Length: 400
Image 1: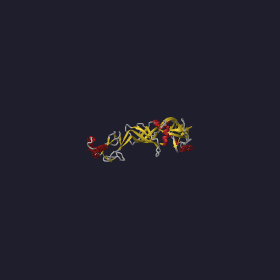
Image 2: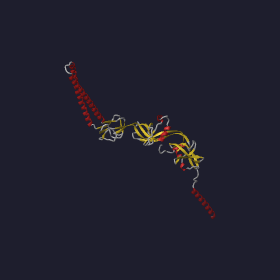
Image 3: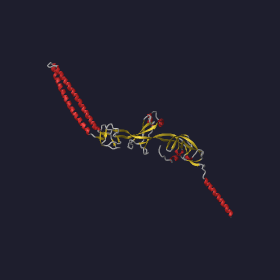
Image 4: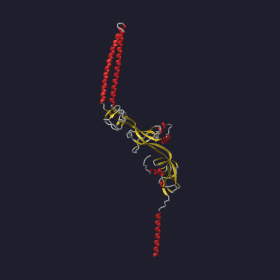
């Protein structure tokens, strides 16, 4: 009986030690693991080229004083819509009114001088007319007639001077009235009032470096953005058209992303390109126009202009299937249940898809996820899945 107990204890100890040994060894690390695989497909995809942009009103007019004076009234507020001709500021006019009154009095004095000079001319002319027949009849000498004619010429000269004085007085009065009118500063266009750096009581003049305000016409706004020389050449060559004007017309509508990341609800159009490279920045300036009937966009806004770029029937793979080392993009093909490293040339990245120029072919099976744990030649267990299920499972952190 003791012998049987000893035998049972030995068998139990053997199995217990075997189980512990297996537990210590764990699963085989070289055993094939399952990986999702998808087929390389051809698709037509629209990507975007994105560029930071600054927003300006279609027309931006600086409002300046035409005369020197103190601001008496500020009749608008910042951001207020105004109409062309609407009064924005009034300057102090006491001194200007006095000058205008004096100029008006000068017109009266000048008119009196003209009237007196005209009377003198008439009188001198009568004297000449009276003496002419007397000279002709030899009743008096010609000397008296010539003296009368000299008097007439002198009177006519004084009349001309008096009329010139009258014209000058009228010009002075008009100038004085204009200055009074310039004291009322009006909006040059329909638009929106900008910043008001000067308040009532400030002394202003035509030579001031800072304008009284800026009125911006923003029913349509311009988004200015720059493109580097390399991007510009690629963009120019890929846009249909035989010349720059035709290419501008063929550029598809562009999108504006606002500073808060939201997409502006109106599409824009690229209307102008500078056509020359800025030597300081190595870039070319573009101007896109956007309608702004709602008034959401104002002068000085910032945003991002996105230009669509269409790719027809290009090879696509999931973003999650690729990784980069030293600037080279790789992925793994599923070659007979074995991971095979491949190098691909990337055209673009759009919505979690990598657009591939070469390195794979349509129909190739590639490993779609978990590639950071792979190495070339490692056996895998392929689990076929759809490309879209992999792509849609990834939520982009930001848009390109």
